[in-house]
Image (tube, rainbow over all chains, first blue to last red; front, side, top):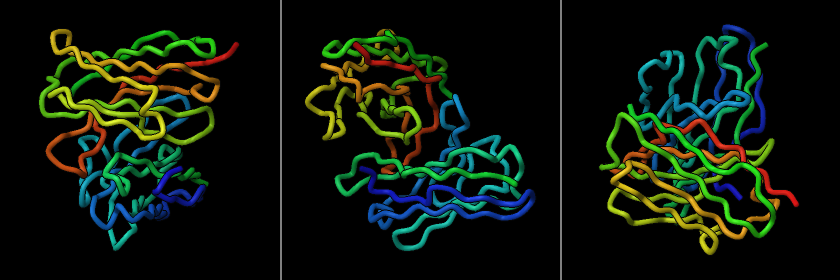
Length: 107
Length: 120
């Protein structure tokens, strides 16, 4: 079972802000990375480290960290932001671990 | 950024061996961990294991007794073997690259995914 916990689903109105959280003890030590996955596709990295976006990822994606919680915020959600979002960090043994996943719906 | 292309058998019977290979193109194996990750139908991502470019490995404890990850530097590729398989191993399997310079490095390149079905 995953040691990183996420809300199963969130919805957001088009153009509004949504925050997805990831909780786990490992986040007190390691930064989280965040991935977007659309049906039938491989995950895509959207955020990593303190608040870093890979090339090509819009600046409406941002991240923050506090204690055992990492957050991904989408400011001004677009229809193409719909999908499943997974956080990734390390577990208590130092092994890579993924969050339980959050399904984002843009209304 | 490296491109990962993976291949292997997609239909297996219980007790057989899953074998997948991931080729690394437009990039070197050096300086990275190379991982296998899987996703059962309708479920989340599960890390299977990783191999460093030096050859050292690290496996998910829940799968450790059944998996082997190897590296072929001459062909710039790495492979996964999982044996014996059961229906619970049915999933899409991904290969991915993770930076080795930080414990917080992300998986920044992914293969296209290989669906594997285990059924008698």
